[in-house]
Image (cartoon, rainbow, N blue to C red; front, side):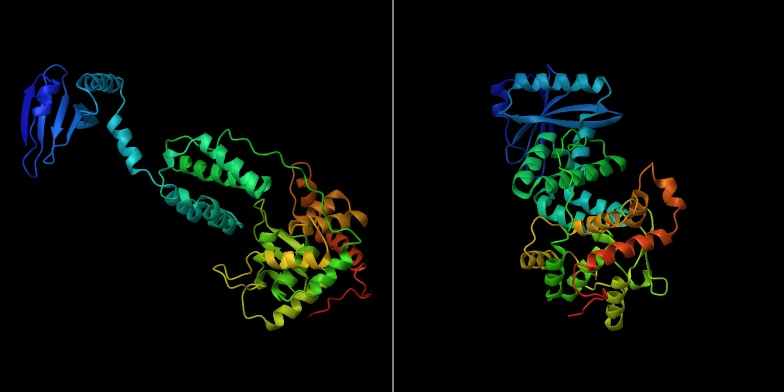
Length: 392
């Protein structure tokens, strides 16, 4: 390493020769203290500011010569020294950006430390982020801004629907919030991005649709999917909970199903009407899995039987019905058979500030009576008088 002191001029710096092999030559400006030109063996010439920051010597890269003129290099050096004098450390900021995690690494940490620990629906986080955001995985998390999130939100809304776009926005916001909670000093780029206005759904299976739905369901070849849809209708449980239903959580003697953690974080005891018990008893006799609805994927249980659902709706001639609408169907028939809002909320595991205290005082007996009335009413449209399930 060779050091030189001179008054920087364009002619002088252009004449500076390449450094010796495995070395660098440094030229120090006589006019601007701390301004240095480093020359490599390949002849590359770069301006640096050399200064002690927080007690340690630092070289802050300003740019390459002659792309940056000597005058601009001096101005950049002066500005950097002004920032340092006010307590800033540009070099630390650059190291932080260089060393911060990628979005892919952040999402892996989010999945393992938060989603899998606290969310029943963590598989949806994994699936949706990999589907829509995999191209982000190698990018530093500081590289995102609100404008980019807004563009993505609009694109997904146009191509995949408003509900899908809003759910993805919520996931992005949650992921960056966790990064901040875990020590990242950046800003959440999803903050301030407005969700699309969603229309509240009131769709449920109408009385004229039930016979066609039951007939198409009976013809479905995928037995696990068929039984899953029926249990979803009969219990009104959320899709993620029903998919992950375990034999150990079912009390056949009491005809109840214990869900350890629902979406709102609370446990729930679900009454199982006779039609549900018939399905579960038949499945238990041939099951060798801990899951009621065994699947071939990573989770071990049925994942998301969309194709079977599409087949059933097509055969039944039913439109605009989602799997989640089965949950609403039970509540609607409970209301039609005389149940009040508190009973319906208790059976579906709803929680609100107004009704929490009343829910706590309710036992399962009125819920059982209400669910039985509702399921009997639904099965009255099926055509068989005893309400028993006909296994295919």
